[in-house]
Image 1 (cartoon, rainbow, N blue to C red):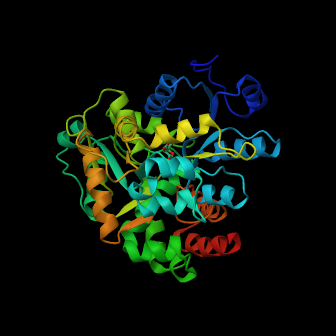
Image 2 (image 1 turned 180 degrees about the vertical axis):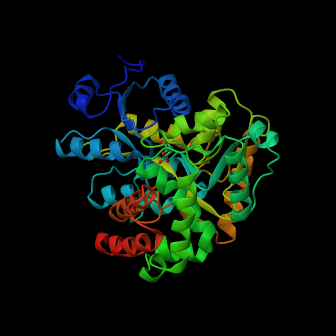
Image 3 (image 1 turned 60 degrees about the vertical axis):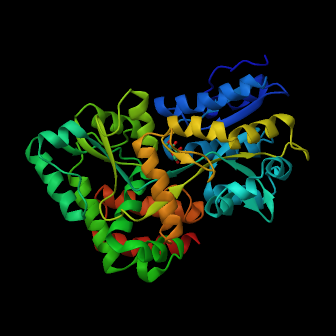
Length: 416
Ligand code: GAL
């Protein structure tokens, strides 16, 4: 079965099946890249490995943001049947490393000089006690807005630069009978929007105090109440069918001109590109109003599970394919993200990708680069999940803004 990409297995119902199909020389990869754009990007990696004669056993677990994938992973590990490689984010990597579950990739890292080319912000989640435990694929960021250009042009709307501009643009679309904001009501999507709203409302110091330092005074503050009020404005301007919608279907609403804006990480760009849309012509990308100087990032990595001491040849091959400069460009062009290496030439990326690279470098050097709370790079999963619960409950009308801020401080304290 070498050199073959085996059929997709869906979620936990097929856990054991995946393990039985996998051959010793295959890599079995657990991931949540199931949308059109994500699958195209993953194909770049599959093909790279196929070219090296390494088989790929696919273990997709649908569900943006990866929560379901992490649930399946825990079940697999508990059953003593960890996959070879797992897509993972931020603090989840540190948690598994602390449990001693991850393989030591130092030999591959040394051969390829990862230490010199992977930025510190990613190393913080890829290297534990001097040991590389995962291979970073990309850098995404969550404070982006995606807009349909012809919808904006037809309604005389310029790219909004401030929250007030954004409110005016939304009101114009609403008056024109167009859904202003495409959104999928799932906890991780609500939280993705919240990342940007908190940054815009309170600025970078506030974001850090609330989401990185978990300061109760920031979490339950007038500024946080204002952030929740802004979330309520966003809630008023999504369509009636938002609840439970997948993020890529919300992206499709913008693409089709059914909606004006989507606030989403730059994996949304992967959907536009996969549909043949061109940045600047069909769609616009811009930073969430009021966060032009900041970047809230997350980085997808593949952590290798320890299969009994030695890193397998397949695991090394996967890790080294991921960090190769040519793969970094080829993959990130499709995925919507930017390379995880600082030394690759980004001139091949589209306009949004080039802006992404520029923003990332500028934010890193001006102290404006922060981990995304929604995507597991600001605080451990227990805290992230506590934030999800409160943000979603507020978004769905369970709390008013003042109560939500109080609940947020309480939930975060309990979660630590
Ligand atoms: C993020 C991940 C992205 C993208 C997104 C939606 O957490 O970093 O690569 O896949 O979820 O599924």
